Amino acid sequence: MAEQLDGNQSDTISLARALSVPIFALFFALLLIYAPGDLNPSHWISFPEAWGGESLRSGLLIIAIVLGLSCFPGVLIGGCLGWLIYRNTKLVSGSLLILRIGQWSPILLFFVLTFALFYAPSQRPNWYFYIWAISIPAVALGSCYQILCMRTFASADWQRSISGTVGHAIQIALFISIVLTTHVWMNYWVVYPGNDNVVRHYLATLILMLFLCIANWTTRSDIYKSAALRKQLILNDVLDSNRGAFWTATLMVTAVGLLWQLLSELGILRVSAYGVVSAIPELFLTWDIVNHISVSLLEIVAGCAVSGILVLIVSSFTSPLEQFHKWALPLLSLTFAIPMMLLPSWHGWAVAKSMQFQLRWPNFLVWQATCVATLSFFPLLQTLWILRKEPVATKVMLAIDQALPYSFAAILYGEMMSATMGLGFAVVVATGQSQFEKGFAIFLVSLSLLLALSTALRFLVKHFFPPRITQPMVVNY
Image: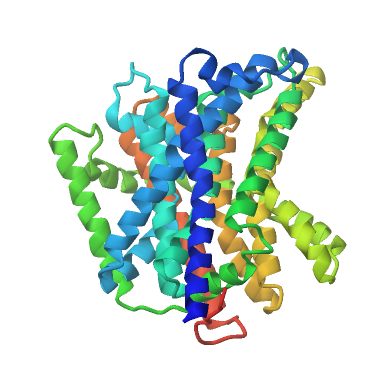
């Protein structure tokens, strides 16, 4: 009885520690927005011009506001949604199948298509729109998927499930806040040849790494501390075989499509589901979409190859000593999403050099591969280390599966900045020409391609390269 009480007390403390980060982030964001005069933290922060000055300060404040306003509400919405779904077994199986890829929809859909649903071409949404239309949904869907995985694949109680979900939600919120800031408010970050102050990129990277270090320590979500749980979730997800999930998921997607069509008929949404579905066959009347797909796949392959080589180099320096892992792996956890802050600097440097030497820039494959390598490095490294005792083919395929969503997000990011071909470029062109149905159709093709690649990798692992265990594993964590 005493052991049970101690366990409950420990779970409560872990939950309180985990929730402290998003609650503090929300409080800080509200202070930045509403606190008057000297009470506003924005007046406490300043940087020398040599370090980025006002651009660095404003950029970091925007990241803090987006993260703060999306993290805790997203966890709350995702937790409540997960609790409602978990009450029905069929809904759980269908939701897990949908959310495994669908949780990336707000990130892959992105603002160029999202505001097209609601705003006229002459209007521009304010930054609150991006929070409730992209950031909060991304965190909520990711939290819902994570909490369902914790309950289904780890058999965790609700306290442990929420504690394990918060760390994941913080990472999603940080990722999407960086993505939005470097896209929507890119004047703070993009380095043009005439504005080559790159120090702010490195300084912002260090500051965000410090924040992520504190968040990982508080929520126990770095590679080393979460390894057993992550392995359990990944392998049990692959080994799970609920045959009814496909039809449940199909019915759920159909219901969402009908709701979308109804809202468009009522005039709430500007783009109809029927128009988008009808536009998909038209994409394949020419070879353009095939060329876009092949270019994006080449960029993903090249980027994953580069990040894979980097992972092998880093792994060669790791030591079998347990004490080494205790300090090295938490440091490697800081490579999640944060290096994305350096991409605008790299892009500006490359453009400047191309102008200086009159090169045919941009070499799009190099740029896109860099973006993919930057965002896919962490999931590749994390999964390969977690599954280090599994067969080589098994851990490599599962590592690529975990990195694929980040790779797709990377090519969309890169192609929106510099490209002449690719799925992200096609989306930008279609949206710029007010062909919103076509833009959404290309987005659905991208999402379907991600789903097909992920499903193929999982099928190969399950049927040809199975893990050493053949039944779902249970870990006491």
